[in-house]
Amino acid sequence: MERMERIRKIYPFTALVGQERMKLALIMNIINPNLGGVLIRGEKGTAKSTAVRALADLMPARIQVEGCVFSCSPDNLENVCDSCYEKLTSGSKIDTIQSKMRVIDLPVSATEDRVVGTLDIEQAIKKGEKRFEPGILAQANRNILYVDEINLLDDHVVDILLDSAAMGVNFIEREGISYSHPAQFTLVGTMNPEEGDLRPQLIDRFGLVVDVYGESETEMRTEVIKRRLEFEKDPESFAKEYSPMQNELAERIIKGMSLLPNTEYEESLLEATAKISTQFAVDGHRADIVMLKTAMTLAAYENRTIATIDELCEAAAYVLPHRMRRRPFEDSVLSMESLVETIREIIYAVDI
Image (cartoon, rainbow, N blue to C red; front, side, top):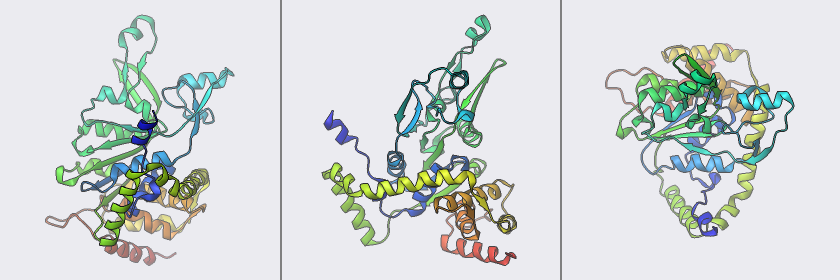
């Protein structure tokens, strides 16, 4: 058993070298799952999956109802399954356990039934009982749903994932019989653009998108190698070295979660948000709404309850690149520095 635990030891999140934008995007989606998930695009070997699993491992254990497949929290009556709701409102005894956030993997071969779950139609017709066989979305509630190579997943299944991520509910209907359950999860999709892209309509529905690349500086690449070899040599000692930073970051994230419900934005951000989306010719209003939500999430992470122009500027760099219209033959990789500079020019042109 001890040997298996060593093998399964997870690399510390705070030990990851570089990739600051990816790490922050993941943290923001943990603090606020309603952002709509994050799509991480990048070449092989850029720590995409390592970062996802490391972040889940970083989070402290939380309370949940024992035996509930949806991992319901007894302290959040609004977002529990029907069974837990009935027990909690009737005063029935509820047994609870401490459990860590998990990473639920969704294979690219997954079918719709495997993802959403199935209803026993015969049981419903004959006995009037709704018998539900939970799917992957049931397991994902209050956890991270991780889809590697999401660009290879069936478009219809991607639609379902994005719908559930946006609504926080999985809704199943078969032969006039319906069932729903909480599905509040952090959606993380990763892909290598060299293997094909997602349809623009699907990319637009991801709240945030981050492009990652291998480190180009010799010093940084050297540090990546050094840390990885140290981790593989003695995972426990390596994890202990980063334990104080891990605890500090975990506390900061938990604090951000508690502040978020009471976080607001400066009134000037409404006009600034609209101006940014208009200047970049972004279709629809999803970008505007996600941009403001992301700004408030950033403020909460920074231990503040008011989002300002600075947070909006940073949020725009995560929300806009994958939604901007591109002309034919235009380079698909936009310089982040030039984007941020343009966003700041637009923002400060607004009367604030």
